[in-house]
Image (cartoon, rainbow, N blue to C red; front, side):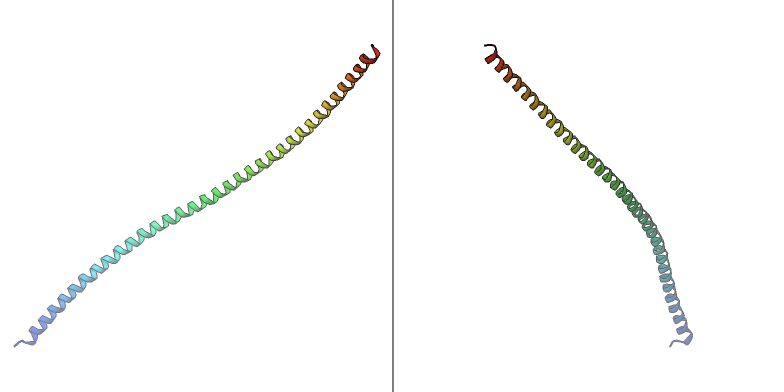
Length: 127
């Protein structure tokens, strides 16, 4: 027959084992929480770097868009200027051709008149 002291002793040892197991479990959980906190800080640092990188990319894109817009505007202005100059050149060339044709027509008429007069002179007067 067991005495109450032996039962208490067994119960104390049993409780001591359970306490030891719980302390080991709590220690493991605490260690795991510390590791998770470290991982969380590491991940937050990476997220901060990634956010900074994305912000820099966005700023570069905005600047690039601005530069691209300026370049497009410059090219459009250059194209419009060249088209305007080309139209002016075409108009001047057309006017010059018209003047040249008019002069050529006048010369041809003068030559035709001179030939006609000379033909008349040679045909009727010098006979």
